[in-house]
Length: 215
Image 1 (cartoon, one colour):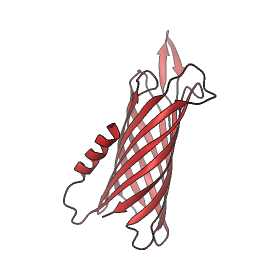
Image 2 (image 1 turned 120 degrees about the vertical axis):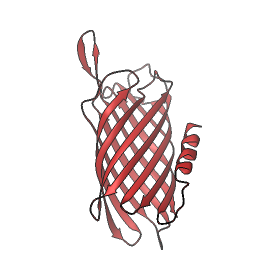
Image 3 (image 1 turned 45 degrees about the vertical axis):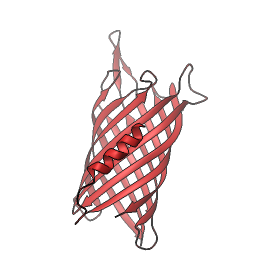
C-alpha cells in the first residue's frame, strides 16, 4: 500500500507540462539482501519497485520506491522475525560533462514492525557517469557518500557509501527500455551501550530488473 501511495506521489510531482522535458516511468522487481551487525541480523527478500525520472536540459530528477518482503536468512542468528521494507529515494542531478552528472539526494526507509530492523533517513552526495554502448544501449555507474544519517533506534554514522551499476537497452527509438541494475549500500552505524561504543553497521544490496517507457 505504501508503495502505491509513493508511486502516486511521484506521478503527481511530475505532472507538470512536458514541453522541453523528458519523463521516464518505470516498474520492476527486486531481490534484496539486508544485514545489520555484520551477519548477526541477516535477511533476504524481494518485491516490486517503481521509478519516475524527469530530465530538462542539464537537470535530472529521479525518484525510486521499493516495497520488499524480508525474511530471516537460514544461517542468521535466531530469533528473528520477517518484516516489510519500504524505501523512497529522490536524487537531483546536474550534468557537468557530457557523461558525468553530480547528484544530491535524500533517502527514507521504513521497517514494519519497527523492532525487526532499523528505519532511517539520510542525505547523499555523489556522481553518476553514463556511457552509450550502441544505439539504444547504455551503461551507467554511480557512487555517493551517505551523510546526516538519522536512525530510529539512535546512534550515528561517520561514514556511509553507495555504489550502483545500471544497464539499459531499447530497440528502435528507445522509448521502451529493458533495465537491470545493482545497488550496494553500507552505513557504519555506531551506538553507545553502558558507556562503551559499539559498531553496528547496516549493509544492503538490491538487484533489480524492470521496464521503462519514455515520453
